[in-house]
Length: 147
Image (cartoon, rainbow, N blue to C red):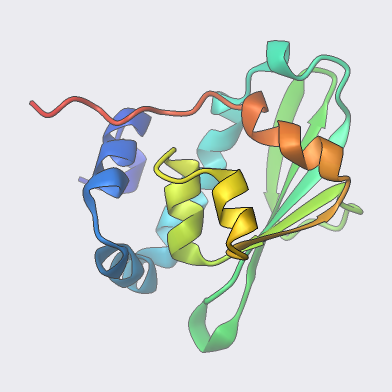
């Protein structure tokens, strides 16, 4: 089943059950479609009730790409809506920099942002007060119960 057909809860379960080595292999061979699908779905997971009156640009920099490249994605939150763009040229209010394995674990709810930050696996630049709130703006999938 491709990532585009997978419900968020099933994706979270898959990530939670995988080893770091399996996640690294998956991201090495399927990085582009996985990142595209994650960011395509972020606006759908946005909960405007959790971000009233928030206007912000959040940038994700996912390191460890081919030849050491970094993928950049920007989320813009304004007027109760969230939009997403690859790259983007807006000045970010918050920039998160993280490796691919820790990124998918964070997005799937299998790892916490504060833990990754404390252990130096998640770097944050910009408005730290906003950065502490961003995860709460989105509905986090929980791992699906095994069938």
